[in-house]
Image (cartoon, rainbow, N blue to C red; front, side, top):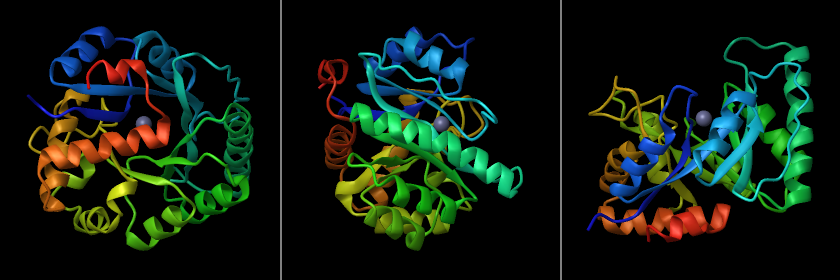
Length: 249
Ligand SMILES: [Zn+2]
């Protein structure tokens, strides 16, 4: 039997058949955390029936986050910082404001956060330090080097790797993936984006998390079974367990 895996970060577009994707994943013993990040994806995450996260990401410029607790909500997110499309003090201030409101919600509800960061290392670090959340969370689809990872690990965060770690030009990220302590490591698809090698170019789906897990297991010199058990345990420490994951166990 395939070892249970958890895809700790996937998105469903409105045109996706989430039920079908979840059934396919479950048939391959993959549990899912469906993640929002804007009003549309928050709704698809909630509607999917999977354990989910809702939040307002960097792209929701000027949006006042409105979050309510749902019984299937296991985290807040994704939220965070992204200056890939440009930086200005105004853009930073807008992202910081939205971050702060959601961090406060996470604190009040005792939920972990799912953090997106791109070309924003220093701001992400300072915002997380300032928020000083008692329950931390995960830096998702991590792409930084080991020094950036060290800082975020020291703040108490888990580090999650997506299919990017399998890409040919990702040597620095593979170095990071070897460096992150085994008890702080998670795996995800970030589907429908970033399908791992050898499926790169296809529309990604939760079941494909096994490719990335196998790749990371080999990189760490572990069996896929051991790696799967370890990352599932980590995910449960980060997000708490959920009956819908336990069914698959
Ligand atoms: Zn995402």
